[in-house]
Image (cartoon, rainbow, N blue to C red; front, top):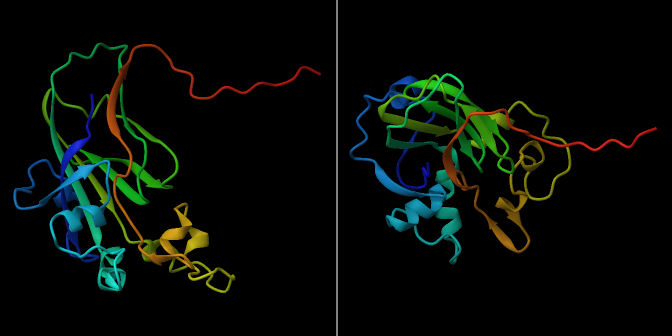
Length: 206
């Protein structure tokens, strides 16, 4: 099942809301802005004319506040497929940028801390027949690097060496600092009945 397309998006100050409140399937998000997935927060804000094009002039400085917010994505979807005892249902995110916590129907599935890898969650027990609510929280980078040593040399920003994230986002000689966040790759549900092969390793015989 493809879970891309229109999601809901809203930003909060750190500590402003309780996670389980926002992740709850009963939470009312009618007044949240829409956001495209795959995508990112800056693109959604630009589409809604809440920020100016950050790649023009000094607009990157005007939207620096975006990286200091906690951003929540939410999506409601219907599931009406029977599951047999041998079936397994997996929720797959091809790219989460970067420090994220994933919830389904108010239950925490797990976390992510690397924008470059796929994240897979077994949701066989959490999925419901009918309405389901998926929520993803993205936290500011600064919350995860503030305790890290800041005395290592790093061009433009000491934060970059502590994050599995596109390094140019922290500023470069040819580009501005635009620290993005969001569901930047596709999302889907996959059902499987048999065991699957995650990785293959070839070892030469002695």
